[in-house]
Amino acid sequence: MGAMPTTERGRQTRQRIVAAAVEAVAEHGALGASLDEVGERAQASRSQLYHYFDDKSDLLRAVAEATNDAVIGAQQGLFVNLDTWDGLVRWTDALVALQEERGAAGGCPIANLLGQIGERDEEIRGVLATGFDRWESAIRAGLQGMADSGELRPTADVNWLAASTLASLQGGLVLAQARRDPAALRAALDGALVLIASHHTEIDAVTVR
Image (cartoon, rainbow, N blue to C red; front, side):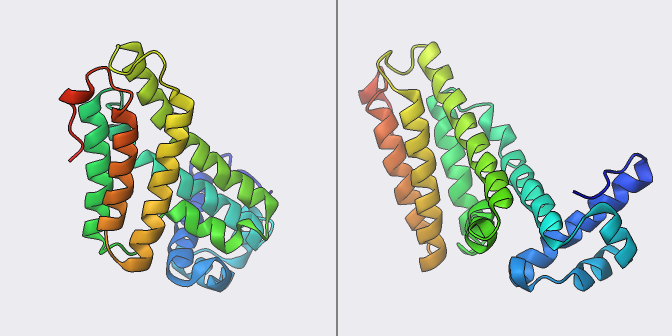
């Protein structure tokens, strides 16, 4: 791993390089993004690139970390309300709305990176796995909150429901991307909501769609 910056200027330079690498990877893929292009975008010299990162793989690990943070961070305002049925529905609606806005292009950034380099670099695969872990943990925390408040039955397995919800989300994103149709994600998430609703203490009072 390259040198971690100890000054604010150094931190800004490193952040600028990572941001440029994220852009280059989004446009050209992990294999197509060159260090020269990253340096040009970041207005950073080769010596600066190799000061902060050992090699391209090291830089891609930083891209993976930044991608995790961006995907999870963008949902934080919604995660805090996952402990209610209405909050859960708003979260799914927001995810579908984002795909509608994007024309169902792009899919899941974490999954995209995993497909490109996860099988080639075990460290990067591990980093991306933590992104999914954080995602699932946020869902699980919300469902646990619903269970603690009595909104879900005591018998509800929140670990299984969280894992199933994330799997439905990821599958829906893949189908939406392939078909360029946000309805695929809507169907997948509605399926997850139906499953969670089956454990609701007032099952007849909740509405999926």
